[in-house]
Image 1 (cartoon, helix red, strand yellow):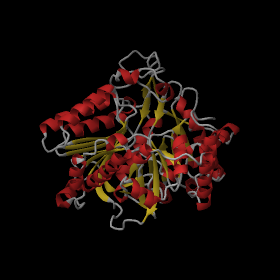
Image 2 (cartoon, one colour):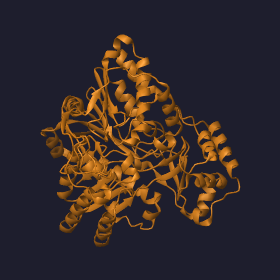
Image 3 (tube, rainbow, N blue to C red):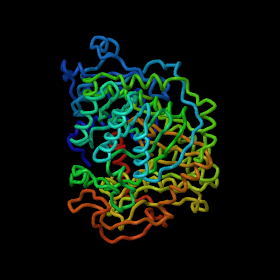
Image 4 (cartoon, rainbow, N blue to C red):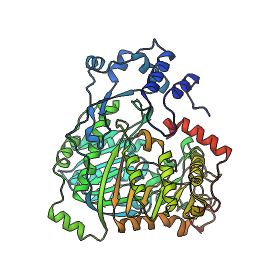
Length: 584
């Protein structure tokens, strides 16, 4: 398997970094070896003056950090950078050459900021939103009723759903003079119409609206050479209403229930047309988001996202070209006040009809020394005594987590896994990661006693009657605890924290049961599916279009035979591990 644009020297670079077996971060010896290897590739290449002017060097903590506010960003004064960071220009030049990126970010560690405390669990109410269309409607409802603030990190925003969101934001800005809005998104799916609306809103409400681009960057850190992006998905309205989970604001997420029944609304023509990307990825995603409410929780989530916006203003050249951040600074001042709900807030939570529990928010990213997601996952699984549900895009645990799951099953815990398959009807992109999921399940089963294996139920999402749909959920339930958010169950989230993520851990018996009910809908409840929920040219379609062979079927099918370790799965897993720095 060869990556476009990478030659043999690039593979030498990849092989020189760390063993991609999901073990410990790269040792100092390995790092020195990699540095020498990179320097040997092209020892005379130096940054040009223009390249020097655009480099960024970021600070992070020695012991790993829990929150985006811990991140301190150095100025880009060239003299200061050269003196402070002792740049190996040849090495960084080589990285830049083979990354083919506009900017390469370098990270070094400094002393931890002891003044910033980890986020503590706070009281909150919550309810699952069982698919992307329900989640989008909730987000739109909250935005349409916003009074003072909106903070949105959509990861992928674009197309007709983003137009709806921007129209609602523009209306609220017009009618609410005190309203401030901050939006973060990758540029990948932003259409020409989206751009025009963004430009109009920025021109009319420049001091109250800030749009922060979060593209993809290459970063050479203490742990790995990797591609990074902002993968967080979160909305906070008026400092207390939150929606968190896995869905973006784009047709495949927002107009889709992920059942193979087409989209609930007509997509933007630019999104529906046949492209290489449309041909490879799913026509619709099956997601599970959560509506969470609480004043202390809202301030915590909003604070995290606002600090992340400030960070990405420095990461991206287009953002730095427009450094005004009045909207961000104004909201940060309000969110960073003392986090407590007060008597009225506590009473409102206690009287809510939604599930009540203690909710802890945690962030992770490439600047951090360890993966907070990995730590919380291990603690959550270790606490289980009765049931564990893993409902994820793919199942790529570290060796430690895989063995811990086997240990729990041997102790009598019932384990249910729901993840994507890779058969002919699955989206083409699934071929890259689904075989490895089966390999990891087989490895886990080999550590489980034969008389306990009946406690493991594995469901494969999607089948030939529901063409090109994809499970996109990111949820784990262990007894009364729910761990969910934007992180996937794989290398980038568990080991290197290559992308910025935001997750939550809610402890509530009622909330956990509602989440389990939402998970089990996919294999216990029949859904309307169609044979060809796609356009004639391979794009995506609305369900109002003529579709073929309507059927009522479950979305996930139980694997009756235990997974086995085949040669093909070994090979795919080996290749995936070698390229985990890129495809995660």
